[in-house]
Length: 521
Image 1 (cartoon, rainbow, N blue to C red):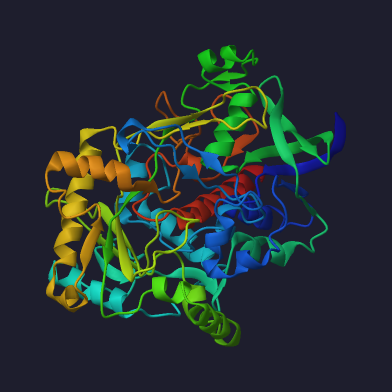
Image 2 (cartoon, rainbow, N blue to C red):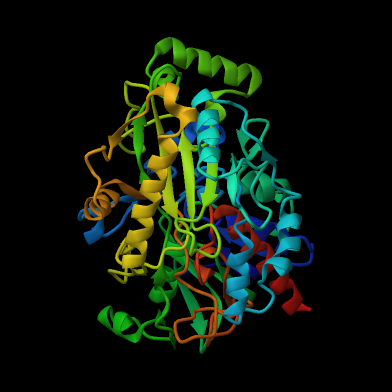
């Protein structure tokens, strides 16, 4: 094992959290920071172009291309599970939607005993990180999407200016992390502006294999780079920012986790923490699809040579138009039934349709109003299947495994049908082709939800924050039972936020950086 230097802080993972942490921790010129990233540079053309997610997701150049284990309630399907494999991590391939979440999310975290994590306490951190993030409104409009917003209003979901005020009830265009129509990733926001700092070292192609401990103190990371086995020493702290799949995997490989799992692979246990890798949950979207008439959608434009040329020309001349689009342009939040205390379902509305990401758009005009359960009760896990860090772990979501989740799925689909049947959409003659109008009973709708359901790529919770027996980190994000080790990424969420999870991940990193710096004084 070749020494790769000694630093005050070593951060594993240059995604949304890792880039922000590298920025904040290296602000003091006397502090040295090493940032390790397994992926490569984020210099590919399709990363910057917002619609490029169609080419970066499921591409091993930019995506780890994980697969979930088959789920019984997803018709036995295994689904693609995208995670960024490039500087910027998921922020380089995601939907760019900026969504803080709702007041109730953070107040719930605080009610679990996590001090300083309530809505009022996290709001200043959101405002601070927004100084670096560029947040823009959509730069393209679609008649069918505008009509859907009017249809939602007919069904009690009023139009609002934007989300992010703490109560997202309503319907509005999504705000995005873009700058003048180009993707604004964590690399652009936090890493690239500070790469000139002499006290910050960034290594790409550096695949972390395990943490090294002296007694119960984390002292650095072992990693592979260009065929060499290396070790980077951390004098103050090691930070895991590898996300909800990578962070629990490295903890388990390093001897922190369930004793029964570690024994299975003859891994010496450092600390018994049975919650490592457990509590995995995510937002499952039900992608109902409708053929429409008398209106233009992206399907026609993308399937026409002239349409493609026109879109490309508009983008390169003005940085507007369809190439600036995230996967979804319009969002809506509502209660699936009146008993819900706050909005618990969200729609992502798209002026397009396709079988799955990576497939061509359908040849007919269509709209896809996907509805998802914001607070699922189903829980899964991430567990190593080998002591080899290069072997992908087992990712099991157990989607729709609880009666509560199946009910919300059915209620959300029925709500979607009410919106699609409204007067505002009548002139477009919407025709439901997925799942189809013949699917009417609760039992059949549950089955259809499993057949249509797919992830929005929001995995959280596998290193959850708290003080209960399944907690992995405390409310200062320190791994329980060991020293000089924190996890700072979406895996620490005790429960998923009510909306897209990239902005909350930045929040966790902003607070985590402050906590590290406070502890060093």
